[in-house]
Length: 175
Image (cartoon, rainbow, N blue to C red):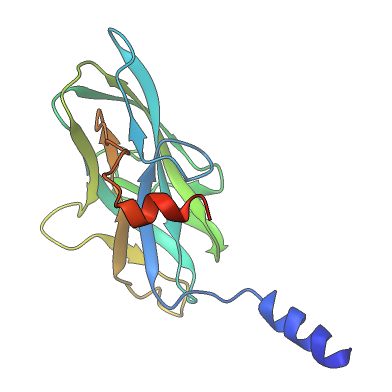
């Protein structure tokens, strides 16, 4: 019984990743990575979500790029953060620094956008200038940490989910 408790306790522990990630999503649950034009103009939000490494997340600076049929609008900064000195109030480039170290999934910015056409494209996150995408962890001196981009936000990408099946795959559905 004690051994089973130990296994459950270890499995439930927060195992922090050794790599830091960032992604663009269309929802607060950071699960939707595409939006579609549903009429003349479609409103949607771009959420910038970060998953820190085991060293946490202190600050970020980045730039979003948009396809021609996306008009960026109002930006909301996470209320637990503030713009870095020298940034233009969270706009070009976008930046944030947290009041306390972030150790789990956290969003820095939410931007209202308007999709004005049906052409496919994507919104990308990238460096604020000629440097790499920048994020600083919570270690002493707040060293820079490389970020891996896990998702863009796709607009008007219609994937055909019906793929050809082999006869063996079809038969396996009925076994």
